[in-house]
Length: 422
Image (cartoon, helix red, strand yellow):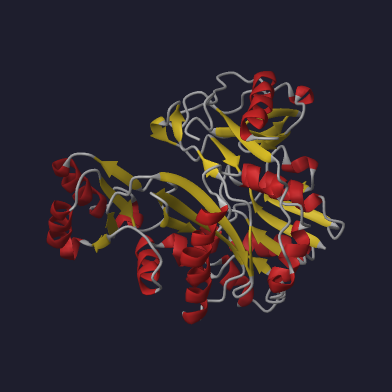
């Protein structure tokens, strides 16, 4: 099979690495890709949101499948674009259509979906400029801290958690006035849930599904989970507190009703559902849905999946996932994300990277990297994810940290406390 994979992050390098292991794979094109994916297939420089450019690559290379890594092309409707084009309609796309992608593209849509299908989540209210007074009254009913979420995609920055009621009210107004552009034309106010978070990943064909290994990621830039939010500074899998009893609840109360809800709404869905959960006491609640894999979670999930990933994708496209069971490696996998100095605020690109030949007992999944004059240089905030196996996450982390020491570039930074709360 000839496969086109959209995206350029550590997630896409991990997916490419896994796809490359399939005997079914004939050719892999990654668009735009990075310095790591260049070693596994052919990188093509394009913007994944430019569907005409995606079409040209698909047709010129006679691809047999499109796999969509990031959320934005899905929310913008890349699957619908393929389905509605006679030249592309026969090419299967791994990822939902525009309606299904609203689970991530609209916080309001996701909350209404959960309410309709009895899926446990925090109490909420959707606020627009027209019902601002009701929103302010709802904040008065809540206890601190106050959670404000931009309804639309805001590049992971659209969630504010605020301790002071007056500040929360002021921020609500600022958001509705366009703080996050169109994404915050509506704002979802949520009750704050106190607990410990984890991520659960499902691959579904709309009725059949397999549950991939769960993971826990670390979002803050600073140790002890302090400082600004990032795209993710590291991850571990499995998650020690996600025991069989807890995961049975997740399955019964969240995964199964989600799939049934999609069927009831007549939303065809072939792709990943990434469920951000919080464990409150012994109960799981949904924080959010995403319609693609997480990053850096993919970098710990994919190494633990023993199945042929391309075979699973073929079964997804053909609605035959019911015939498959997931096989999971019992070992732990951890990833440590190395980032550019200054990230998540201003940072420089183009710093030469060295030490890849010294990486042992692990995998270096490239994120913000590119090849320039024959050398690997930094090309983003999150630069490289170092994943390792171990009998438990402590042993795996030791290996990831050793590898973080040997890869060098000016201004490198990584958290040294991944897994501190487990």
